[in-house]
Amino acid sequence: MGVDLGDLAIKHTLSLQSLSGKVVAIDAFNVLYQFLASIRQEDGTPLMDFKGNVTAHLSGLFYRTTRFVDNGMKPVYVFDGKPSPLKSRTRKERSEIKKIAEEKWKKALEEEKLDEARKYAAGTSRLTSEMVDECKVLLEGMGIPYVQAEGEGEAQAAMMVQKGHAYATASQDYDALLFGSPILLRNISITGRRKVPRQDRYIMIEPEEIQLKETLEGLGIDRKKLIMMGILLGTDFNEGVRRVGPKTAIKIVREVKNLKEMLSYVKEKYEHEFETDPEEVMELFLKPKYTPMKKKFVWGNTDKEKLMDLLVKQHDFSEERVERTIDGMIKTLKETGAQSKLDDWF
Image 1 (cartoon, rainbow, N blue to C red):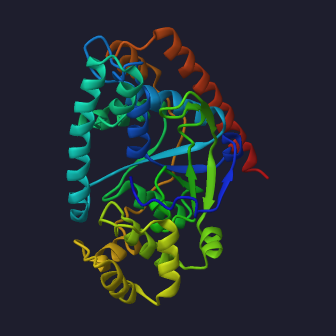
Image 2 (cartoon, rainbow, N blue to C red):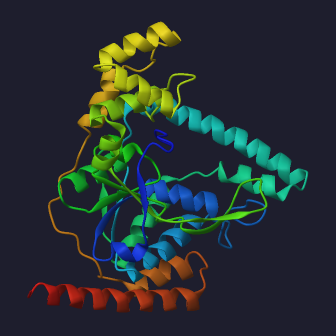
Image 3 (cartoon, rainbow, N blue to C red):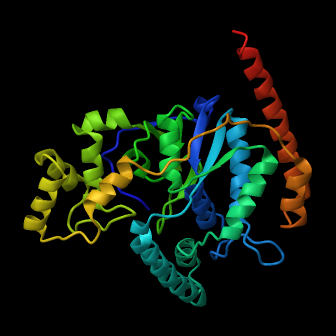
């Protein structure tokens, strides 16, 4: 979920092709949950193999990653490590939300309301450790690098961009900006025509880029005050202040000098006491856990046999489609690799 900056962030639409040659650090859990939520049947039932195992995470990761590669992008997936103790409230809330969504999904199915059923089903998505392990096997087979973070994957990705290991962080959450990612990419894994919930119309979703410096200058604040906004609105690590939205939050942080003054203002005006120490939340965003990169990323050591075994033999994917996709990806990666070596001469 993360902090909601609404329309305050300055966004620029772009194409996947414009990311050709660029290393993009992708928040793995973020995109995998998107796949689990969106790749479903009409009644909301998740994509599964003949044994009843959910395969939406593998399908989304495999075909979307090949699309990235086809467009010349160099994806690096970053997986979450051990969550911060401050996140326990959020995890509990999400668990309760999933239970409620499951109840509503079952009721909608009984009443044969398929549109409602699919909407509620999306909120029941669960990513297990077994699924995560499968995704890593898939990426290894594809020849796509990944990083195991010590803490938050989004924080690791943001630090990788700060240190020049990647061009941008890719995530739907704005938290990457609070963690200090100079560039945030959104919608790269959900581009295309999408139905508007509860409406009989569709919209086009395009990738967008947000530059931290430009957004901060546009808002007239620094990164610490952006984090203060996040604390007011609510992050994965603290509950926000009721009746405070993005526009009110930016007004408050512009008027106060620091976090201490903001807390005093909120206590007096909104009678709000934070259940989590805001100083800890601030420190978590300013100094997140980071695993240093010890070697260069390599793309293209594709293991076709490993992929065919995982996707076709174990999970009943279409052999013809998988093989065609793998062969196309191998060809693209070879061409990209040859071009990269040629570029080294100039």
